Image 1 (tube, rainbow, N blue to C red):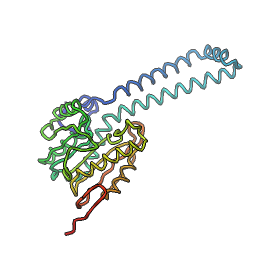
Image 2 (cartoon, rainbow, N blue to C red):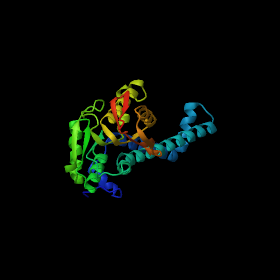
Image 3 (cartoon, helix red, strand yellow):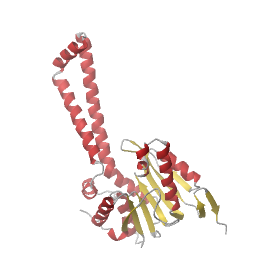
Length: 291
């Protein structure tokens, strides 16, 4: 098992270190894909008896029964294929794609040698967190990266993966509420987040006004703790246009959105931005520092 993260490492090594979150979803998809595949085979092998059953149940003609049986078997086979594709995409998105996108996010920051402090919001098992730490180590920076975890067990898991990657001296973990980050204003040079912000407010329903307000609060907190001139990098699903709109309201600069990347069967994008060299009085009031 390697001690350094490289984008070309074998995916089995990545899974060996990080495991997989939400494995129940993957098991669910594979189970149903296998079930529908079995049903498709049964339709093919026992097609004539099934046609007879359809004819008796539907009180249909033999031709109508054969059509109904064939249509049902075709839909079952297509469903199996779609479920296998969904399971494969979920399996790939959970770690290999996450690992690849983490490297893309790190490359969007530019000069890491001057970074003294970074924050990974919703660090999970540490794929992005450890990629940032590896970059700090590679550039000889004396900086550190803080991972904000949602619970003690997650924080311990993250610290274990940092040790396995050989970057534990660059990593610290802290529990906290992402809606009220436990850090002072203008604290971090870089703030990152991968596949996390869209989960905030999910208890209200993903597309409700309440959930949207919670996500916007997180974006505001992300901006608050970022130093003037600092860089933010967020990779997320579905709600990226909301984030861009909020960043524009907060007068962030150099807002860029990457091309679409399919992750977990939906579109995702990386959003990068820079906090301008200005003094922020509050999230609704901005004053430039004239010199």
